[in-house]
Image 1: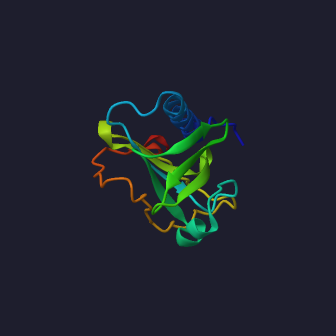
Image 2: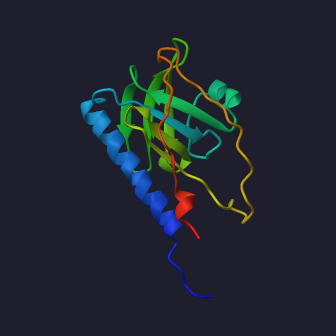
Length: 155
């Protein structure tokens, strides 16, 4: 079998590096202007850390909002930790970069969507349950941003 360049995984790695850079700057300097983020991640990822009640409530995916109130944002090599307020209850989370499904900054109409074409067993992954968790402190914001689908660039 001929060796091939895996452009899909290379793009995913590069885009996750972009997210890491953005979150690192926010951790150091805070959110600039009207920037805010909607981040959807796989709650079943083996390295994701969240309260049992959150993983029970959102067994597939969960969307967090980083906007007005967040604390303890620490960006590491493989993921980030953050404390968010869920109904007046601060909860720490750890989200690995490779658990991120979508990253959207609606203030500048920027978005990324990571899609897997195969599961670890070579089969297509099951459709995840679409859920959204927004801390009560965050106001409603409509994300009209355009999402870039990385699969568009695959053959």
